[in-house]
Image (cartoon, rainbow, N blue to C red; front, side, top):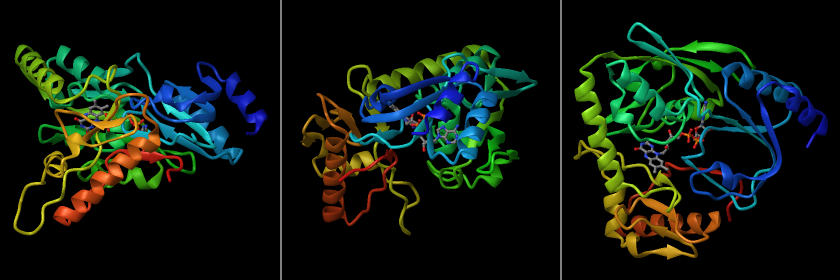
Length: 312
Ligand SMILES: Cc1cc2nc3c(=O)[nH]c(=O)nc-3n(C[C@H](O)[C@H](O)[C@H](O)COP(=O)(O)OP(=O)(O)OC[C@H]3O[C@@H](n4cnc5c(N)ncnc54)[C@H](O)[C@@H]3O)c2cc1C
């Protein structure tokens, strides 16, 4: 690692630079090996300054948000990891629109919107992660997805310029967008919401959070990254996506484990770090589930969780 650049980054105001840290601290799986340098930024201008310096010095980096949709290798990564995440919401109200820094946690945006009596984003109640991660992966729940409530997205291009994009520019698909392939970074997002009934919205949020509590593990006890595989795209006769959880259940996933990695007892598509798992354990378990699903149903499961680093 170029020590000069590390020292330069340390001088930047409000940017946290940590050297030789375990990435397990920065993922909801609580897994991942060492990284030579982790840089945490909270505001778009700070992130822009960091990315510009890394790009100019030709230093490779990967960007993450809260780390709630990634599995990092036990060997860690041999590049800079830039985290764009903030526990302090950065949200401005403009009529019925919200302009939000992509480092803001998605659930904080939901709470802000509800307090203003704005509807359109309540479906995202309780989804962990940042707004940037949610836009890149088109996060969703209960039949809605983040692309449905976007008006525009400001990105930092690979050449370091700011660019305003419309949702139609970003090729949003089920849990996918062009951002996953282009490497462009989401800086700020404009959500288009509409007036709703505050009381009704808060009641709906409570119901959603209760449902999520029933269906998902408590990540402080059973670390995970949500659904491991994407639901299965419909073939010609069917119209609905087939639940990956159901098909994993049918091959006996809930009884499977590998080292410390297991499958959540209430949801066969959620792999958990149950007891001192390694990232390789989780990976091996996922491969075995996918193998059985292919063998029994001829279906190729596609990972929703993204891998970072090397797996064998
Ligand atoms: C208990 C639990 C429940 C979950 N439930 C759901 C659910 O209901 N629905 C759902 O869709 N997901 C769910 N997830 C998965 C996860 O919360 C979402 O995918 C979330 O949007 C990821 O955001 P993040 O900030 O953690 O992204 P990370 O995991 O940090 O990164 C994921 C990807 O996004 C990219 N990325 C991150 N920030 C940016 C940015 N600013 N610009 C460009 N790219 C960026 C990264 O490069 C990486 O490729 C769940 C996860 C957990 C642990």
